[in-house]
Length: 282
Image (cartoon, rainbow, N blue to C red; front, side, top):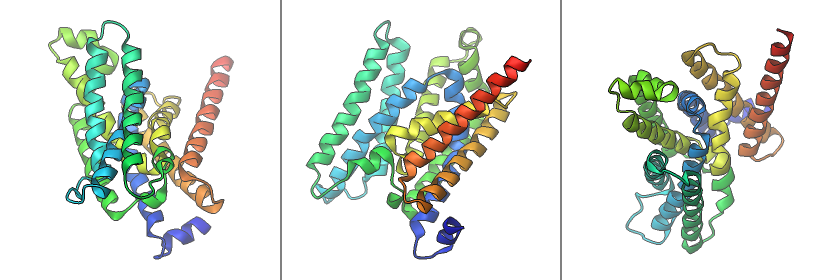
């Protein structure tokens, strides 16, 4: 009740922005998260997420150090860095004959290091923890509209190329033999994953955004019988995790990002345990 009263309070707009961003982004998270879990590219999505800090740092540096580039902020930098990382990591995973994990791990670390260097050289005090672990105070009306635009773009593309992505996730070799350009659609899927990661960096942070991308889909996989059902359930679970996490974090004065992820993790463990019990009984 305290959380609901706070949502209705006109003096606390950031809470409404955070909840709205979470609900909007859950649609993209449910769809793309299902593809990520089905394709088993969680580690690649994690690398892309951590490279985002480089773009955020560059955006902060441009806004505070280079006065004439105020239009290039943290969110714009995050989008550029995420897409660039997705393309580079995708090409590495497709064409690296060996040491693929080493190359991806190196890009993961380099992206974060570049971001921290930019933040260190940005005038004034910048708290990197708020970007690493999320802070609902950073949500603004501009972010809300940007998330709405990104969300619409991700959902439209994911829906248009549903069957192509399905082939890439489950039977890539057969699709390639049928003339489908699987490499191109794989890179497109990584780019959509990158945009989806950017959607909730402000709410749960870079470190834990990968958990929110995968845990709702993983929970949904215990109940869904098909990919579409898994997407719908993952979206609903994501909304539930974000809403309950924000409510608890507000009521008990806790960081919102970690609270959301703990709830998602507990539900995942519970769902997995129930599935194991059901399997043993059968």
